[in-house]
Image (cartoon, rainbow, N blue to C red):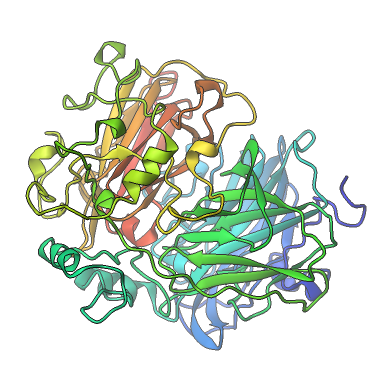
Length: 621
């Protein structure tokens, strides 16, 4: 069904539809850019968009320059001279050698996000390799053991914010499970004119520094005086949705701002595959195409049973592939609205170059609720219908328990409707009695209590059916994790032998983030250990008021979303909603040391990172 002149091998990676058919520019062919300091504003201007590279040997060069987006100039770090860096297109079963040359004046790295590979090729300085020194070339070499949509980015310093990222596609060794006529990448990201180190310093000294939607007594938010007093007494903000929004950020589609003409051509009735990657440093997006449904066919590079929706939330580092079939309208707007609704990335599906659809206005900003603070509601203060009640995986008789306080397990019986009701619960009738938001006695004994924890979720519940902040009351179909089902059966369906509970902790005022109260700098030599090939259920409990996209390197896990063990969806990033919990099953069969962290870049550098060690079959890594 693929058209003869637009095959999967020749993806239109859009510098704008008019130039998408042009010859590959020099900067996409392995040529370096001038050496200059990291995050500098000088050097060459870095263009938006990307070319395509493929083959068994690929040369990449990292350099710096400046970027101009929507008329604003900011620092840039480019791979092969562009932001995003070039599309790397490979095939399942091949061996690839990627030579990365560092033309910066500081160390750099490339992490191959979502790839199954030897741990020393994963590209995380301090965990899997020492990094790439200025002027040096490092060669990554590994077999391609999977297919799907992925991406790559720096894991050094804050370079990702300045543009050090790019898309990847692995074509399957056999036939695609879904037919399509056109194949496009939409890589979402965030641009700022500020040096990312300045951003980090301001976040540490005033967490709300970049939040332009802070509530005041004269704002238009639909809150009563009682609700406003309640938030003030708790020293929390119901508008604390994203740490950074517009105008500090300009949201990008393939490196282009919303008025810079990003477009994808189509003919009416064609099946168009959109590979949507959230390559931002710190942003969640709510993606929709008004007037056009989307059929999601893959998540984080892994095939899922097709599910038709009208909108979905994509957390930082998540990937969704969707099929759309445009009709006879001249154009359709692809809207990626930031979760706080301060701005949007924008592109067009166009029947001809230059065709434009009406762009919807930004919707009203969402507000946090008691449900986002881990509050249950009921006559006794607990909503027992929302509790996670045990199954074999969480039962102490099934294996070792990592927290003696645990007694809750599989949330499969929890209904989507109950998820949404809890997540969106308002504060009506609530009082401060019992709202012990900082009661650390609720935490298990192995969570380190200290200044890094300023909130404790009183009764976190599973919210796999929560579509995300701002999308809970939509009249149209919105994706949630419970709607995802693996297309191919999972290879390992063993019952997990133990439950590992990890708490996501933080102090938002001090901008300190951690697992179990321990920032990464304090635990770099105390990894999370898994035995070879053991089957573990991991429960993440979010004791903060922010959604965290948690990413595990080197392995896929299966979301415990109510599906059978054979068809739980495979992912490598999971969003843990505010004040909630999420669970996944993991088979530890990739030996070595792996990074495990929040993929909000400033949270990761604020301490929410750990090392996972999988002991090899011979007892070593």
